[in-house]
Image (tube, rainbow, N blue to C red):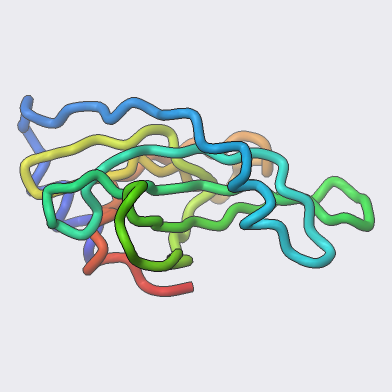
Length: 140
């Protein structure tokens, strides 16, 4: 329902702007490391998630198992802007990954990828607009 409402909000809008991906601090890998997992990559966007007009950090973190194998999974986090107080919040997104982030008239939106019924794991073919406003992100 959230996705459908967002699609209606963005339909026909030429005012959505792509938010550039930024380079995360290399120290973040240690912050997100977990026992039995290896951080493979971190993607970061600076976008106002909580509505206070200050860009927060929205992260997609890719993991593999420390014990080997070829499994790969993603987790998503919201961090306050540098110099601001607040903790790290892990949020739940049902997606195979984020293609890009945009700031639209209704707030920040991620273009997310999803596997279709006949897609191999490598190649999700479905794209959706998913709200990444803090109020729309369920905790993980």
